Image (cartoon, rainbow, N blue to C red; front, side, top):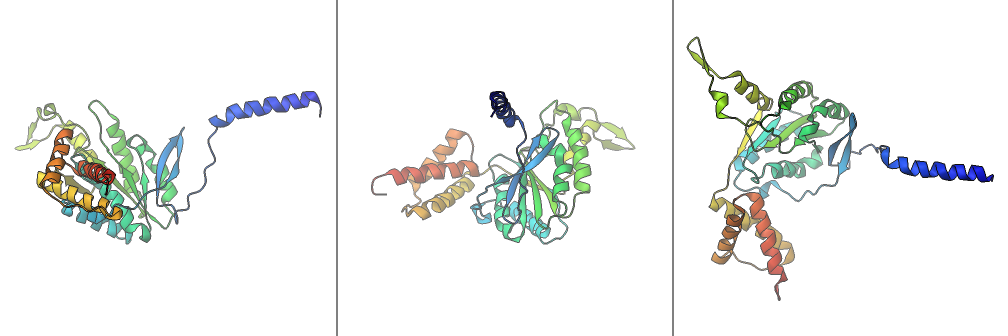
Length: 296
């Protein structure tokens, strides 16, 4: 082979090696018969669904003290899976109280019946039309899940999102539903100044337009579920549950006693909260610690 041709090929390979990382990778079509969950990724002006490996170890019975919320969302999800009318849902309230865990537990409950979960970030909700378009003709039932949906003071893109939700949700096919979690009931901060300029019209009080504009975003969800901070008794019940769940496969012998209860309370006080996440973390700490002891 001519030396100049060899040099050219070597240089071409070097250029391709530098360019290849900049090119979008090939996308393999998702087999939704096997894949249970995916995450929407934005890439330039478009995006794609990335398959996820998910664990189905979270069960509805693991969620203690939120029976009403669990039953309502489970009923709504069962209607959706069965092809019946169902509502988009907003789960709002204190952090670590089981909002996201409830959605994952419902996937475990209904995955065999065709339920699938797609995670989408708040900043990517403007891509909803593209996501919905890819799912419209599939036989599975898809919950689009947006975790921690909220807006900070001064952000105006909640108005853009409101328009996107209107268009995407109202025209969404029957096999797509949106579930979102938030620490705020109306998704945006509400200030005292919002309520300072109330007007009297025909003998009735009408809230300031800014208030109605903010509240209108959460109105896009037909089902609202509230989650509240745990009482100490509730927290200890959840600790006891998770210690039992985590200890059972290991054969660890344990008993609920005053010392364990006080240790769990100190753990919560050290973190400044009592919630399900804190209870689960303490259970993992305590079970792991006991398994390290000689003779465990």
